[in-house]
Length: 424
Image (cartoon, rainbow, N blue to C red; front, top):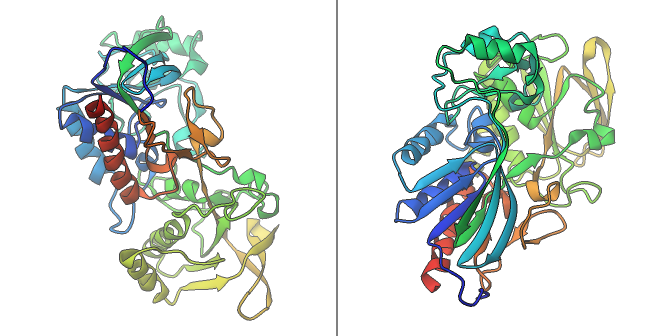
């Protein structure tokens, strides 16, 4: 194992990323006695799972897992977390890393009771990143209703404006602190688990599929937010162009995935996500038609295969094996897909009220250089060097994975992080 001779040993573990993999890693390590620091760039914990309506195969809401984890974190004095935080540098070796963490200002302190007075006083609106910009929110906001920690955020975009002053004056608990500034802290840890997660692939880069040109073409994660009760439409699946209920919806699989010009790998979750989204449509609109254009339907494992079989039994759902080559805008904002049916050889022109692109997952490290000595593939996934030890990647930072796989992998990486300490 690579280590610095004579370096002081640290019995602490750092987890970079507070999504489902990060929470699992932290809890597994803390509950067997280790001190854990979670560093999360967002103002809340929960990551992508917090943005879901449900996750498969049981179609559980995110509250099903996150609320339990948040309670376990709250009750465990060994876990300390930092939100709106970025790792700036990592120095040292396995057993003793010195980590510099930048804490960005929230402009709200621990006095916050989520009374909403600051948001009521604020007049300015900013794009809602949690809903992928499909709506706006006040410049003072709670990121979402399940946010943990349950504290509001004052957007940096309104700092220095009259709106910021209004927020401060409206707060009855002196929780708004407009003088907050960024600061850095130094932490010494024995091992680091990178659970930096994933980002939806930028569909605007896929020229032939029309995203960004036609309003009724959305991505799978945007669709997830449209269906969510706390989403921009209150859970009603509506066409973005006119807020009408769609009568027929198309899903385009492998939008940017398994494509040497974009993501050359299979993102693992996309087929199951579209099958799940089909259930959203069919439950909300019993007469709606769904068409799924696919290269191969990948539903690994017995439970996922059964989920797929159940969808296939629905007479309002059609599967077409064929890659969509182009899109055209039809009348009334509808969208025509041009594809070839690989089974019959027929060239198809079919028109839909709404089209959902099943875009793949891109690891965060593909677009953001991480400040540590990590081995990263050309696609941005981190490779684990178990012989060297010390730093490990879990969940979607390591490979495409769903919630169940991420949890399993995170448990294993928590054990590897602990073994780094034991070997010392």
